[in-house]
Image (cartoon, rainbow, N blue to C red; front, top):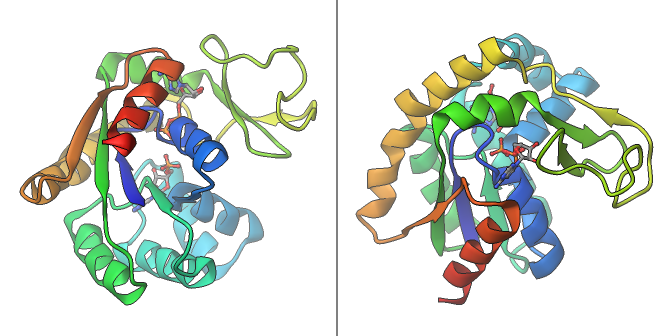
Length: 215
Ligand code: ADP
Ligand code: AMP
């Protein structure tokens, strides 16, 4: 099973991907996570991407395509993949077709998380993650069970993303509207697009995705 999770920043793609990883032993391929790791490690890709990401703009198609190609090579053909935050442009969607063929995979679903844009700033500015294991949380919608400790690994260290501020979020939403939303018709024409109400509570969104995967 290979699926794309599509939706604007803060729609809940990472939250749902990490649940799918746990419940279905799939692999989450988040280009955002890969790029943040490259920035942190100060690799050539990271040095090129840093300012672009801080501005809320899109990194070049060539860079993200190469990252995905390398990851698919490492994963091999067996485990299912969740593409999270990729593809984000028509050029990336086209490249993905070639990569899927190269790696012997086929796309099963493109799941669009439908969200109300006004809620996204609130979602993004309240977002934080465990610094050790990466589990995602929110100041109001998903607090750890013990307030200062990660539910998954018990760490007391949390972090917030440099680009999770209101000004950058608005730019990222504009990028989504201008460059990412237009790729939906490409998948719609092939009957791959399924929609889930991303404004529902996290568990309900998960249930909606399960129904699609079972169908
Ligand atoms: P994305 O990966 O699409 O940018 P995230 O999965 O990181 O979005 O979610 C953004 C923030 O919103 C996180 O803090 C997450 O805990 C929270 N969140 C995700 N889904 C929901 C939901 N259905 N309802 C309320 N908050 C949510
Ligand atoms: P995300 O973690 O998906 O919110 O992505 C954070 C930032 O990384 C984005 O605002 C972009 O600057 C960059 N990025 C992530 N994925 C892509 C992609 N597929 N194409 C271009 N830029 C990307």
